[in-house]
Length: 317
Image (cartoon, rainbow, N blue to C red):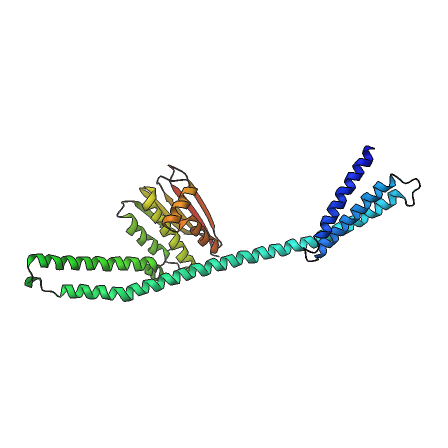
């Protein structure tokens, strides 16, 4: 009795699975792999039905063992062929995933290149438009004869000249930040050292920049991305880390360009850094996006009280 109940339950479950498999054929757009597997489910259901029915036969029309054996062989063949076709589907899915990743990288590259182009255009407009105006103001103020002015007016003119000088310097710094001329003219190492001096000297942060690349140049995409990443890391150190020492290493091995950045600041958990940077700068996600666009690798190590360390590898071979 228990065997009959178990066979009945098994048959019902098998029939349910068969109906479900057959109903999904249309949704798979009549994929041959799913049709073959569904046929295997049908034969499994037939096999269970046959096994259940033989319990009530008084005289068997077919040899039970032979029927089970042939049904098992057919099921194995159908499932085997179906699995072969499914493997082709998985291979196609891998190709689709690869195309999707390449498409994402192209989109990221286009976005970053568009951003850099907009920065360069804006920097050029500032330099070519506002720069001459400020220079003209400075020249006009300098042409005033201080001997023909009283003390108070002379002070105003001198202060105006000083402010004009400061405005020209600030404009030049903004223009260089938007479109780094040092990077274009002298390369990554010189640009990083210059930015480090500008950022760290007022804060009295000791910065060491080590490199083995000399004056070697790289594609614009690599240089600009590494420059932006390094600048963001340095800005974060100045604004949030409360550090006294920074070490920057720019090295090239046989296959990779390696950027290592370390400060001895207060550190933080990575989640808080990501939130803080997304509000005040590029953020870790944008850094990851730039590294991903270059097919690189990014490692972040930081914790409260243990400073900050970033290791970036970019393939260059």
